[in-house]
Length: 298
Image (cartoon, rainbow, N blue to C red; front, side):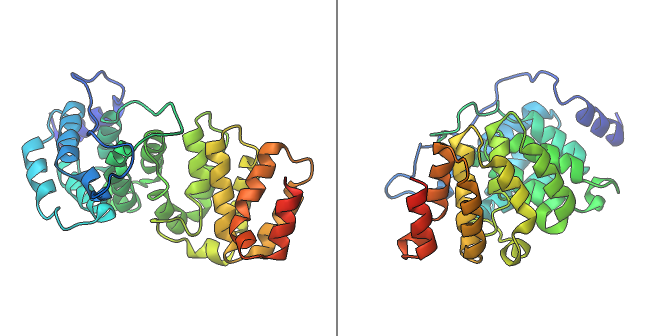
């Protein structure tokens, strides 16, 4: 079979049954004393990656992948390991980005059903998000075709298992209009993990994540997303909205105070909690507007 035909086959049959069980590495529920997050992407994770990808794509060279993945891994921090493993994935998956994404999607374990106490094992999918961010922009990686849609499909699938809040940021920065439009559509998705991504992924100062300078300067483009999600039925999503407002308040406190004032009108108990959480940092510093809002939102 020619390479082009193989790639088309991979991309067109993502739901074909796999010949064996997919695996996740063993990981603690939380960081243990004396350990670091780097252990989440170590030998066990590499073995699971190789196992799952070989099931998803029989031509995957698992031994070569293991050797390349382990080379130079030891001194790297967690996020650096994610980038390193993404580059190794790129060298071992189909050269066409859309076809590679199809293989990665076939290798994913089932979506998370819970939103709390997910543990640290989900960090296994950090390299997959890094792969989307590194190779999902340039048409040269996708046979000359725009890679935006396969990149969005992969990140949609990833955020249901882990999160795409780190990878989606490069798309917001490089393709802001269509990425924000897609996220606005996803605010009405049935999966709370997807809805949370719409808020968490657009936070201007996300911890560990690439900052979004345009939103630090002017958060107006993302406010419609927060407006849609402020009364989300899942606390997992509402907490992200509150944290997002807390980010904005670091640069535009008056805007956040005014928005929270508006949201107090006919506010439910859940929305009042969101408001209290959103202004908690300026409240701790005694900002009069934050103190007032906290009192009104009781």
